[in-house]
Length: 484
Ligand code: ADP
Ligand code: GLC
Image (cartoon, rainbow, N blue to C red; front, side, top):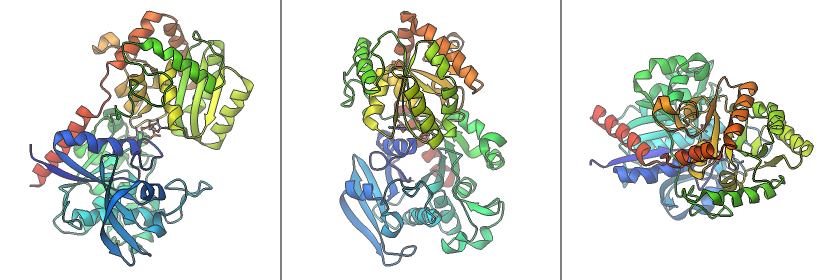
């Protein structure tokens, strides 16, 4: 098998820095690619958390003035990942979340911060680190969107480029004046290149100029070619549909393994699901819910944003209560949703439990102890929590969009598709449709055989990266052949 070298560019990589699923993907894919003959190194910014965790670093390059201050390119490793880290303190040595101030406002210089990341990615593409000259540069989301653009406008022999969309809603839009200060040519400021509604968009740049485009599920790959799903970029994606494909995400099945998980109260395997009851009891305690084995316990682990449809779930709370179900919700994000769920918990002690925050340990316990996991998203490029749920025997209840459509088999469709049912899907994405599906799930829950069958087919589903990484490997190889 011909070895391939790929430089991945991502602004988040688990376990170094994470705000969402992008980090999980960027952290797990390189490890899974090894088996497919792909040597991947990942470039990320030197945020404080990253600098703290990095070990055995080697300084490859030092600049007295990199986009306005001193900077260094480091090579290092962490948790089996080979990394390039762009250590530019005036851009990245800031507290909290990578993108926003502690007041939740986007950093005013985000355009420069992520242009700097893409610039060095392109330079590594040209051979800046002689020990690792990539065949392909793989850019993730808008933060890396300028990497294919720099490589294109540099006008030199270059590696192949792939742009992956994890979320169309974040497009990296900035004022046009940025163009000059980040070293892109003004002649590119036209609507068929970088211009986007009078400004520039880093995502558009990547989508326009990368050799290949991927997104994280086949259904989302179709949805984003519509005007609505494309969120302004549907036309461009329709034009480029011959180089666009959807490759489903997997999860790290070692981090998410109920047989060895150090974060759950009782470990269990696919054959001994009765141990889930003990995790359910601990989960009920932690969320101040009544202890009851008979009440179906619904779990949610999510960012609280419009995308995730949790306002619809809030509307369905009367149904949850009427049906004798319980809810354990872990999440953070929009103030209205946080306040609304906290109020619901206060009004319904013992029945609705809410933890506002980001808590990985609790996320594992919810997967191990809830009977069903709810993901009522308005759009969902792939979604990872429903994959973890399959692996932990929590039955997913999801909206019929994006990767949720592709990863869950609805109870009513089992025979037609030839696959066994693993959960419940609802459409349209409304509070009424969700409430109806919750009622249906409640009936199924009380039919122990049906529920056990759903759990078992979920546990038998392959949610690992093994095969999916092979699709990326084939994409890289195809790109090399096409460019040879
Ligand atoms: P997105 O990237 O859109 O947020 P995904 O489902 O792809 O959605 O990935 C979300 C990831 O973040 C999952 O690994 C999930 O377990 C984790 N997560 C989300 N919210 C929380 C939270 N409040 N606490 C702990 N983990 C969370
Ligand atoms: C995004 C999407 C989510 C996807 C994740 C990883 O944040 O919202 O659906 O699973 O990226 O690809």
